[in-house]
Image (tube, rainbow, N blue to C red; front, side, top):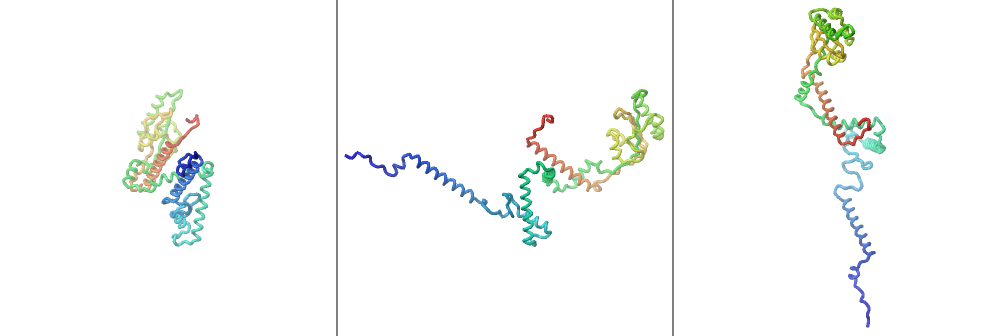
Length: 308
């Protein structure tokens, strides 16, 4: 009697676990999946495996040279409309743009801005120009300019003229601070009554501070030479007036205004051009400061211990 086991059919053998066959099928499935994915990736709409996009004139290491930039550059260099330029002229401009892009990419590759001050300055200027673009393009209305003019009216006045004496008396071992102020007050009263500045000073022991030149001086020159406190007092004096004693830096001052010509007021119409320029500068400074503060807020800035 034949006791041999009947031979299994094909489907029975396929149902059995076979490590080599499993690995082979897995590898085939993986390869097929990668092939399908690659096909979908490289044939998707807008995807290019090779060639230059229609909006570009060239691709340099994946960086675009736009056709619009090329047309504009060609017109600038040849000083003629693009459609009137020759092929040789266009090729020359294209080669220049390619050379420039290659050099720029090399500069970025070696981080040229980290070592070259001129490159750093150019990058800073470029960023500021980008930030300022909107401000430069805006045309402020007359209402905005007039409001700016009214808020900064003193900037647009003509310069006045002063003939001013700054006289001092210093306390010493023979003169107390109270006596110094009394001498200054007596001299001021005498000047108000018509005594010359020289006589009022000599009679009361006052001397010139040496800060001001004798004769006429523009207001801005007096502002530079005197302290803010003294200039604020002087700017309110008219011709023939004297200030009360003023303590400044431990010294008693008295101011005699011998001659005063007030600054001429300018109207908005007269100063409009200057107001426009100043308005633009202030707006640029404002947006640049705001941009810098924003960039700082996003930056990781670490300082040495002595500057923290």
